[in-house]
Image 1 (cartoon, rainbow, N blue to C red):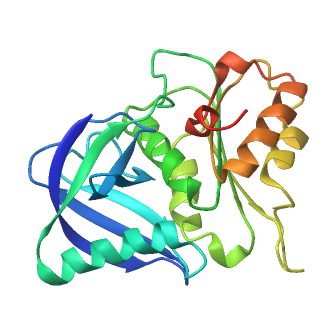
Image 2 (cartoon, rainbow, N blue to C red):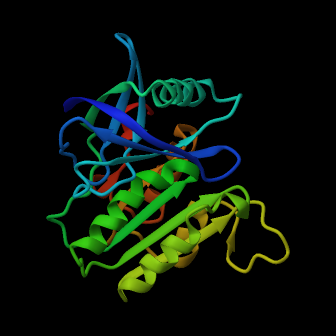
Image 3 (spheres, rainbow, N blue to C red):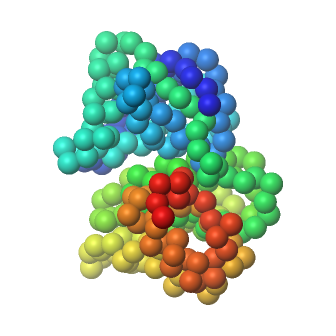
Length: 237
């Protein structure tokens, strides 16, 4: 873990409730794809957010923060960053946390699964895999409630087009009649597409109440528990 101060470069809305935050640390940072950082609001108040940027971006950190009045955890963090941005002061960060980073030594095919802004967790992995020209088959599933929440759909389609082994599968829970892709729960789409998850390495991010049932369903669908990674596992049974 690296403790650094950082300037807030920009706060940009991606949807009505999701914001991209760019932070410039006072010194180059070191982290792995899939790590998260903590925004220090106080000595005993630290807010965790996945790092969306790839590890080679040592001088700029990208976060995707889903914030609404109903989500005080994220909204208070966003307001804290807005205050630093307005006053041109530095935020305090703890960078390079987590135990569910991409295992680059593995050669197993990959399922990257994201629910909502859990997208940022697997985006870092996807960008890193493209940068190192990985030949591992990668299936990137991104589940959202409504099509309007697919704020990076075009970007990920370009990622999928960059190499033949990359696949991007968006899943919309509440789809309109014009939507032509997968519908319903994102992990159900994975199990529909893949006969058995036994040969796959799986990385997951989303709401904690989502990750537990997904883990159990995936194990029943052949997944090996030791090949499944999510930081939420440390907080759920």
